[in-house]
Length: 93
Image 1 (spheres, one colour):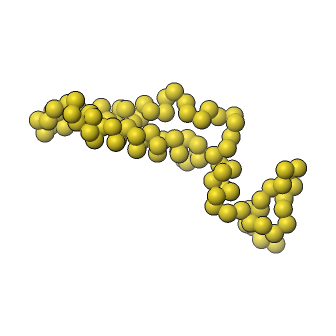
Image 2 (tube, rainbow, N blue to C red):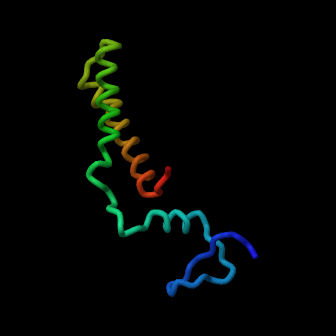
Image 3 (cartoon, rainbow, N blue to C red):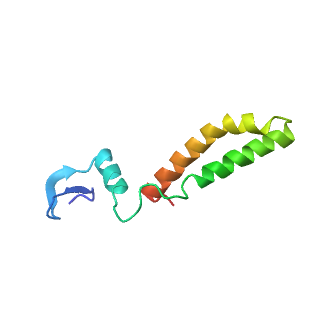
């Protein structure tokens, strides 16, 4: 008997010999109605890192705060928020 995960049927039983693929595993991990899809605090880590980076650049490198906050601050905000969202949805510890 194999230890591979199997696709579940609608009635809770398992299908015969169809192992779960990567897409099915990801779909099962992301679909959970008990958790909100996008909590209010999710962009806060990205915002904190973007603000910290802009402040560091302004102080240490003599750059301007606002242009640094706009770029690469916007990219930092988006990338960190996406990474945080995937970590929240997949419950990566």
